[in-house]
Amino acid sequence: MGVLRAGLCPGLTQDMVQLLRSHGIKTVVDLVSADLEEAAQKCGLSYKAEALQRIQVVHAFDIFQMLDVLQDLRGAVAQQVSNSSGTVKVIIVDSVTAVISPLLGGQQREGLALMMQLAQELKTLARDLGVAVLVTNHMTRDRDSGKLKPALGLSWSFVPSTRIVLATSEGAGAPSSQRTACLTKSPRLPTGFQETVDIETWGTLEQSPALQGDKI
Image (tube, rainbow, N blue to C red; front, side, top):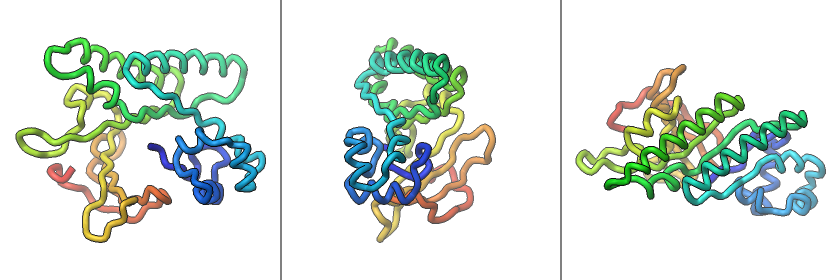
């Protein structure tokens, strides 16, 4: 679930984020579900709240709905370009595991084909539309070793160009909002570096040197 933070969309400053949180609007879903005009009046945001209307949330409960949504998005973006209006900057799929995992396992060969079709569609959108695509994937433990691994397995591991593992921070007294983000795959940066962040404020707490592979 996306947490509201400064810079998420044009005009969304840290002061605006704090005002919205004080009225119970803490996530992207809270925001798009709220009456923005009413929220703007309560928070004194006036016309600045219009920038928040650029965030859209679409619910897709299976891979077929997901593919339909992406096709509709392609057509909508093409219409925006022809009308010279604002275009899409980022696509967030949260989570890809929810729509793919029911199709995998056993003799369901069609599931793997559909997963690759979705992967290709996301890559094509990123390339053709020039947008960033962020996909969340669950983690699971290997049955034999007990080590954490991406839920969609080896086949999906080749899909993302950059991978960041987000985990709850360990240790006594660690805040529940604290997370550790570790870079495990990147075409441009060295992997193994991590940062600890607080998702309530999205502030960086510390930087750490490279982690060993068995800690990821």
